[in-house]
Length: 74
Image (cartoon, rainbow, N blue to C red; front, side, top):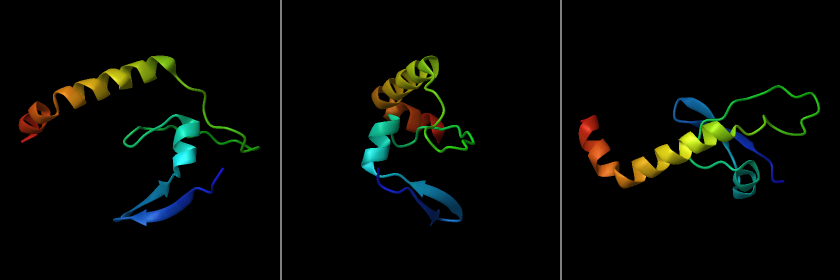
C-alpha cells in the first residue's frame, strides 16, 4: 500500500489517503473514522455494519435533498 502523508490543511493537520487506501478501508470523503492504537500496525478498527447503514442513509438524503439542506442552513 502507498504511504499515508500527514500534512498541514489550513490551520489543522490532516492525513492524505491515496485511492488505494480509500478502497482498502472502504471509506470516502467526509467519512468519520475512529482510531485505535495497534502495536503491530496490521489493521484498523473492525467495521461497524450498523453505523455503515446509517451513514449510507445520510448520504442518500444529502444527495437527494442537498439543495433543500443548503437553504435550511442559511
